[in-house]
Image (cartoon, rainbow, N blue to C red; front, top):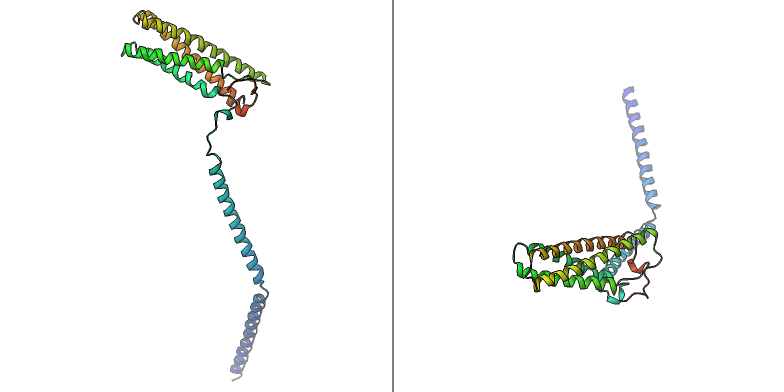
Length: 228
């Protein structure tokens, strides 16, 4: 009987102790909830949404701006020099003239002779215009840039003279010598030399612009001294 009483007293004690802890825990939980600043949470959430919205609008504006900026074709007067626009014609024409002349030894001799003469003549004219009328003057070049420019102009002169020789020989061969083989060979040699020279001139010209920075956005050019 004594043992039963002890057990009952112990169970009552533990039960009361557990209830006390439960009430305290519940009270602490209620107290912690009472201290939560819901207004602050709502304000932070609203600020976050506002920032994200501003970023989204800003990104949309940047995309719209980038799409609308580059939709304009530059006029000829906008270029610091027209030399790069003109010089590509003789490069292409003289390369094709040499190719047509070589092919004419094997097929379509008369037809390709006409094509070669016309293409070489146009290439010569383009080289003359690029070198004499739209060639810009420069100033303030570095020693390296000046050397590159000198090589560019040297090969441009080679191109002009070899193309002139080729056109004269081709005209004589086509109109007076009935495309005599030996003369046609000399024409081919002159056109191949012209094609090589114009390629080298183009190489040094590209080096001037893309490596030395001459001519890009008008840098190192005397804009008032050259003709458009």
